[in-house]
Image (tube, rainbow, N blue to C red):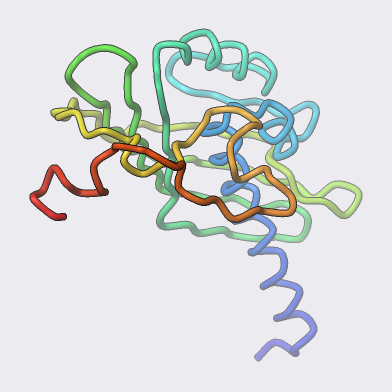
Length: 187
């Protein structure tokens, strides 16, 4: 059995690798270029079936069609990592939901991020990401008024998640929006 300090070091390394993928997803969802770039080494490569290039090239490609979507949510589920010194190989399953600004559908997509991580100067970052698509489907989008929630997400740094310190929000006076889930018959 490993001694406690080496087990603790391995746990901290694993958490650092998982955090990179979480930050990547948040950066993609909020369209935060700085956050996305923070997970990659400067000489990293990002490869999808459509583009293979630097993180900057990936962002330029990704931004080129994001004006067609009102929202995007990327979720990460199963994550594994094989750590060998200052290198690691990881696999993260992702699920994405994209809501186009027009049309009567949403896009549901599942796939995996296959990563080579490297620790350089004491910091883990992605050296190579290969994105594999597993499936993609169109789903029915029956309109549900997001205004009933009051706090609607944004895809930029004005999103409430960037607010420091986070402040409480009171419902706007005189709002006539239906209560959440009123479309289900709830009141």
